[in-house]
Image (cartoon, rainbow, N blue to C red; front, side):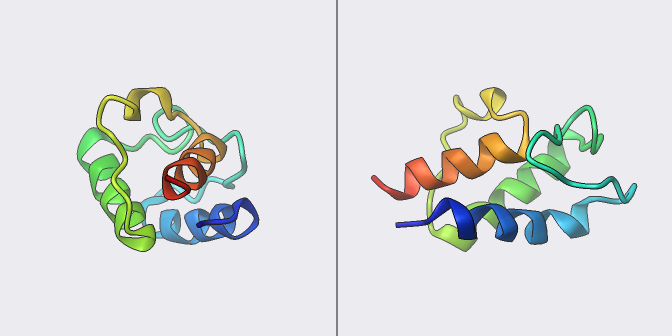
Length: 81
């Protein structure tokens, strides 16, 4: 089971190569609005998150995950199942 205190910093690390504009990343950083990630880049990032924790993020849930903090919460929740 993944712990929030380890998941969040690791997500920030995984996100670094996708953060082309060098935006400061925090809990409330939005993938589309703040980081300006396009859909293909988001899918590449999602794949790296899934590989890291050996989980599947359901496609129907992805539109509801808008911030880094929401993604960390989702990883913790899904990995607990």
